[in-house]
Length: 239
Ligand SMILES: Nc1nc2c(ncn2[C@@H]2O[C@H](COP(=O)(O)OP(=O)(O)O)[C@@H](O)[C@H]2O)c(=O)[nH]1
Ligand SMILES: [Mg+2]
Image 1 (cartoon, rainbow, N blue to C red):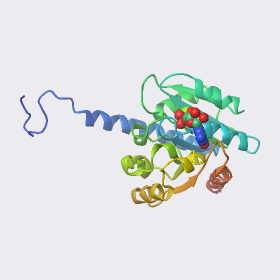
Image 2 (spheres, protein in one colour):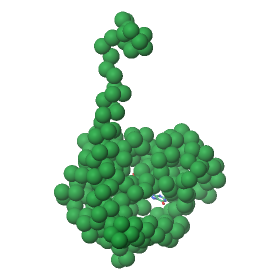
Image 3 (tube, protein in one colour):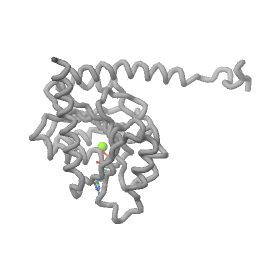
Image 4 (cartoon, helix red, strand yellow):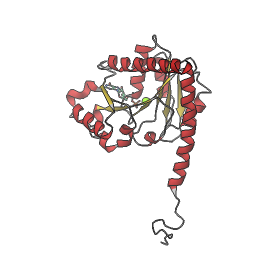
């Protein structure tokens, strides 16, 4: 095979790096617009990420049941196919809109922007984005969120923070989910938190179970404190 002068790139090869860089630049531009909109209306935006099946939708349902009478909240939820998660979340009593990505493995800021045309957000205190389930692609796309919260289920193994460092590096909070299963599984909570903090010394950690309710009060208090901070930051800007 012939090589270009640099001797590193086969002639005719597609330089994917450039495409990816311009895609990410465009994404960041739209993400900034979302961040500005959320700041103007005082809505806390939280991007929920994890592997598939770690309990994101169940957490959204349980969080809705606990907080929907205290704050206005909604969920945008991304999946490759089906509207099942949005239906589950609506059953918990809050608005939810499914973003079907048709095979794309992550949500992009443009998709969130488009969703605003179909889900009213102006009055919301808290908007969750449940991202597509995987620990790789969603890590690269800023959605304009205030916080990125990553679930690590006890069933996934405690080695994931070091294996998927970018996701944990870019998250402010790690939720160790399915805590009710910890007695039956060789998952070391301390090891998972230690590894996550070696990747990201600032990351906070809460152990939760949507099934037993363990840690849910701490999680909801964390959310309400962030909602309050957001309101205060909007007020401070108005002065
Ligand atoms: N034991 C246990 N199972 C859970 C918990 N949370 C979710 N699940 C189960 O895990 C599976 C995947 O949950 P789901 O919320 O759909 O995960 P998602 O793909 O991350 O949205 C479902 O069968 C849930 O019932 C939990 O806290 N404990
Ligand atoms: Mg889900």
